[in-house]
Length: 88
Figure (spheres, rainbow, N blue to C red):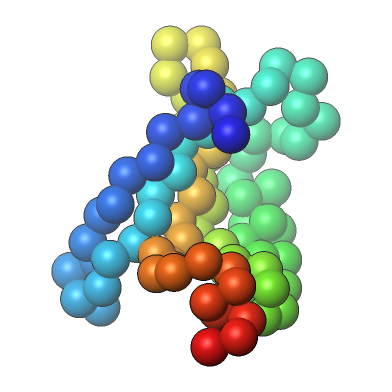
């Protein structure tokens, strides 16, 4: 767990479901270019990446605030543990 990572439970009013929103500062040594093309490529990659043991990323966004770059990640909220999901 990262000390500077923040989680929020948010409600998607269009789909009437709860989502997990994570706000994480990017390391200054991060090799990713913080731009719309990088965001688009990562969103397409995460949309295509589907596996029962990988929690899907529904949306990713970059923001800059007070000289620091952040990534915002939206995921579904899973209830129960990984063991519960695997063994039903």
